[in-house]
Image (cartoon, rainbow, N blue to C red; front, side, top):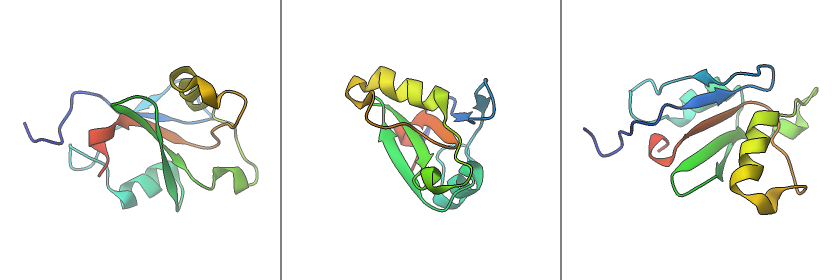
Amino acid sequence: MPATATTYQPQLLDPHSAEPRTVSPANGRSFRLAELYQLLDCQTIEVVRLSDELILIIDEEGKFRQPAYLNLLATYLWYHHQPQARGQDSIVGRALLCHDKQFK
C-alpha cells in the first residue's frame, strides 16, 4: 500500500445536508488542490487540524459569501476536538473531513 494511503474514508460535510457524504480522491490516495476547489466550491482553502490525524479542509472565504451558511456539523466537530475554539468562531460553507495523509 502506498505511503499516502489510509483506510479512513473522507466525508463531505455540506451545510445543506444533515448527513455527511462519502467522497474519495480522484487518484485513490490524496486530494489535490484543484479537486478540493471543485468539491468545496471555493477558490481558497484552509486546513483546520482536529487531531494528530484528522483535518477539516474548509472554504477560507466562506464567511464572505452571500448568503453564508453555517456548517453545524463541521463546527461541532471542531469544537469537540478543539474545545478552546468554542465561542471564538464557526465554520461556514462546505467542509471535507479527512485523514491528514489524504491531502498533499
